[in-house]
Image 1: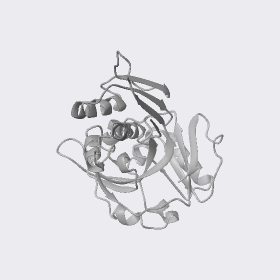
Image 2 (image 1 turned 180 degrees about the horizontal axis):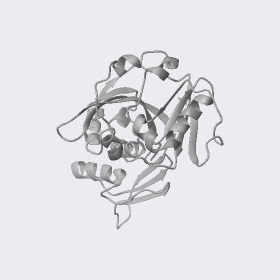
Image 3 (image 1 turned 45 degrees about the horizontal axis):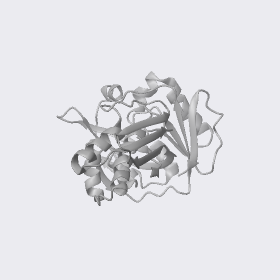
Image 4 (image 1 turned 135 degrees about the horizontal axis):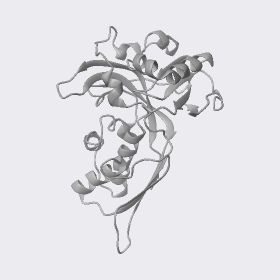
Amino acid sequence: MVSFPNAKINIGLNVVSRREDGFHNIETVFYPVQWCDVLEIVPDHSVKALFQFKNSGIKISSKDQKNLCIKGYQLLAEKHDLPPVKMHLHKIIPVGAGLGGGSSDAACTIVMLNKLFNLKLSNELLEEYASQLGSDCPFFVRNKPVFASGKGDQFQEIKLDLKNYFITIVKPKVRVSTADAYSSITPAKPISSLKELIKLPVPKWKDQVNNDFEKTIFEKFAVVKNIKAKLYQYGAIYASMSGSGSAVYGIFSEQKKLDHSFRNCTVWSGKM
C-alpha cells in the first residue's frame, strides 16, 4: 500500500498563554497543502519476518526513539498485535520548516495500518492514537481545515475553501528550533479572534492575520523576512511564515513560476 502524506500551513498563529505543563496555548488555522512525501507499507510474509524501515530523499533519523513512522507502528502493534511490515518513506517535505511533514508521516502510518490490516478503528480513536505521537498529528487523520487551540491539539472544523487560489512555499536552508522560537515569545491574548479574522476576504488578511513568531524569527534570520517581502513583490495577496518556520508561503490569485527566483532555497508551488 502506498500513500502520500501531505504538508500543512498555518494561517495565523497567536501564542495566547503559557501553560502549567510548560507548553503554550495557541490559536491557529491548519490548512492542508499537496506538497507530499511518499510512504509505502507492505506486510512482511518472509520466514524471518521483522519490522523494517527504510528511507530515501531528505535525510532523517531512522532511530526508533526519534522517527515518528516507527513510533506509529510500534504504538499500533502494541495495542493490536500487528504482524511485521516493511516500510519505506521517501522524504520530500523539508524538515524544520513548520509544515508538519513528520506529523503527517506519523498520522499516515497509523491510518494506513488501520486499512491494511482491517482494524476498523474510528477516526476518533485514530486521532487519540495520533495525539500520543505529537500535538498536530491528529490533524492529518481527517486532513481538513481546522481552527486549532490548546497546544495545537484541539480542533474545530471551519469552512475555509481556498481551491481557487495558488500557493508557493519557500524553505531557506536555515532551520528554526521550535523550542527557541517559543523561548522568545511573550504570550498575549489577541485583540481579535483568529476564528473571526479568517472569515475576511483573503486580500484583507495581510493587515489582520499575523504569526506571532515572525517578529523574533525575522530578527534572527533576515533571509526568512526577505522571502516574505519578496513573495509580496511577486504579487502574493497574502504571505506568512508557517508555524515557527522557517518555511514561508505566498497565496496567489494566479499560478506563479518562482522556482528559480529564490536562491539556495527549496521551492514548491501548486493549487490550494
